[in-house]
Length: 431
Image (cartoon, rainbow, N blue to C red; front, side, top):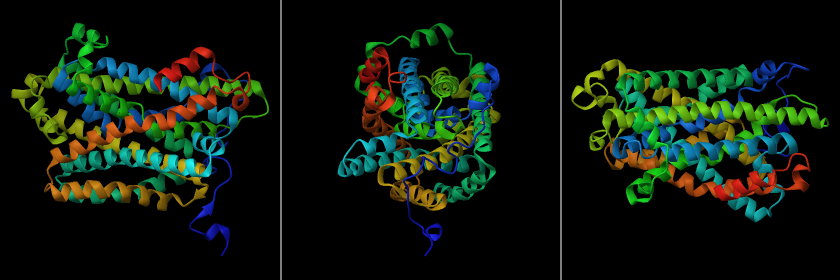
């Protein structure tokens, strides 16, 4: 049987070989032309910072604790910017993604263990997309949750279609969906008229965050914001730009603009997460027990006794549309990441459709069991979603420690591109 016809192939080439080094960059372009050319990978990464997992933790955190946890979103977002800068730099300078670099510098056994932990983190992420997508379909079209969960398996067809359009078009679609989500919540927050002095005060860390309930929600926010799979993804897709790898000046320029792209897109994700928490606090503070699920939020947005005078069916529909857009966005990046970690850690490559079906199939199992066991009770699904995000915060060090270690190494990065001492110190403190 020819190698091309095998379902499982050996993977020892460049990361995401089909898109690696494929996007042209203008020679001697202006700052803005270069920024436009390098923009895209940051958007695919930022998507993970505003998926349905963020929604339930941020809105729930606002409804229960007011603006208190805005400081957690701020700190998480700054940590994310630091880590994504390191991830992009690792990929561009070494031409290895984080999974490949980890596998190269660890034993086969340890590499396999780290692969399993990373796959579980991807599954935890995918659980959020399954739940968010199923609930959005239920809210918009009245489909039973069980049917919605099963339908999410078939989003592989959407992904395969997008892959045929080319990587640049995928980036554009993702950026458009991010803009839709941001505009929806900007509109909803503006008409909610939050208390601005209280909002600003919320960005100052306070010791109440360490109380049991607040800390559990804070951990969920950290896990939903700083997502481990994004470090693998960014270290891979940052290599999609076509540059002369032997020219250190071109490599330095690529690192610079990849950092600009990442920070701009993550600032947008930070804004979305702040808007989610502010919306939860401005409309639902004091009603946290009435907005514990996505459906309850959907209904509360059109209930004047909870949301006040701004309540309307339009707000509810916009909320559900943004939720569906968020789930689909994260589906695209989750599949790409699965491919990166499988190829990097265990040097195995399978077709995109197979990878998607395996990841989504495994993620659907706990959601289906939970849906059936609790008789379609959405509260049970939302609890599962929150705990999946808490697991992500526990899995983070497995990705963070190798990333900081590699990017601080002169041997791996070279004198010019290794982390300055202050960046390494901050990285280790975060880890």
